Image (tube, rainbow, N blue to C red):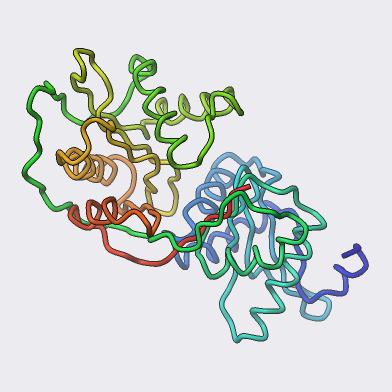
Length: 306
């Protein structure tokens, strides 16, 4: 996969230029729930005028000209926005994007996005970027664009619960342990031992941006976070929830459903009209909680973690 081979390919991968922003947004906005992460970075680049080096354009060559047909965000995670087409065209496109990625991109911490594209690319990238630490091939993508269903039956006995609200930096010392506990359970390693500075910087950013929500209560005689969630990605009219967590001693008491309803209300009024998330298909308890609040299944994601 030398440069000469890539030049002969029908499709190329090159840094996105400022003049490409509108075209790239048009491509990504065909499915804003699926592509909220690239859209977020495109909107940030358009607003700031600063082009991040992690945005890459996928171009199709037509004689002496080319057109933008897709894009790749290759930051901490890689997310690809690639067009559908007939089987032969799609196969050629994905093969050439994968070849260019091996030659020109650094391996990210994970591949994340719609399952069809993500798993297809991973099959082509694995000989160079593998092995994966874990492949989650079927994650349920869900969204809600209306008022959430009100859920009754929260068992709040002895908890002295506060209302769900936006976090502040005054909450940070209580919020951080809850976030770390969630991260370890979901991702499989302790971010305080591997990449602590970046992890804490990211959490503080979400708090300052008004994209972190929590609920406090009394557990074992101490005020603690009993429920939390963050809007990890925001763009294209979509707020993608990440890090949904309930204190492990309080699960099964209805806090997740009630908390999610409050977060959906807040996010829709404060951030974006549509709220989305994705959840592992092997977590039926979480899926039922999301459905009870009013989330509908809209697609399938996949995550490949290194």
